[in-house]
Amino acid sequence: MRRISSRDNSKIKNFIKLINNSKYRTREKMFVIEGRKMIREALECKNILLRLFIDESLVEDFQEEISLTDEDLDCCLLDKKLMNLLTDTEKTQGIAAVVQKPDYSFDSLLQNEELLVLLDRISDPGNLGTIIRTSWAFDVGGVLLTPGCVDPFSPKVVRSTMGGIFHMPVFENISLEDMGRLKKHGYNFTGTSMNTSQDYYSEELTGKKIIVIGNEARGISAEVRNVCQNFVKIPINYRVDSLNAAVACGIIIAEARKQKKGSSLS
Image 1 (cartoon, rainbow, N blue to C red):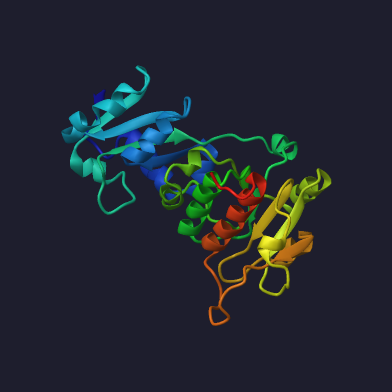
Image 2 (tube, rainbow, N blue to C red):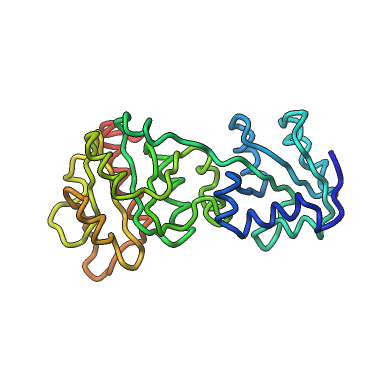
């Protein structure tokens, strides 16, 4: 372990840039995490932890995490003031890391027969993070993002996934051409809309199905609506205008898993 004492250190600058700059995260194929839970989740994945930062006053508290790292992992000790620069939350837990972005194959996705979720211009980090975690919980095969969605590797989204970002394949910048390729491989696009008579639980949600969730304020774009072959709604109290995007997605994919597994969600 080596001690870093200056905010001008290149590793500190790199970390801060990964927090604030989406294009830099994309170019470097890295993102940042913080907190014990996220570090432990990352340690369960093979060879994605690139650099570890620990508050030097809390080293003893993180001996178990340190013991699980590779011997050659770059581990840096910082004082509390410097550690606070590396956090996107109000109060740091004293541990953070740089990790490698996962690399998933879209071509491999085409060969699968799993439920997928397509998010069209989802803008709220909390919603995206919750959808990623919920999709992991209900065995979704992948989360697809159209251009205009919030960066899934931004600190707020990553934190909201509560570890799901390491386990759920996420595909960014899905184009209309990509959607066409999915259709050609047998995938059916089912959009969500209140302007349909088809309830979600009456729809066949097994097999090569893609559930489409639109922007929180504007819904599914006209271009993506044209891709959808059918639409379903979640029947709710007529006095309620709409459901949160993450909640709506969770309700539908829970039904999909129920159909796949039978009557039990176990």
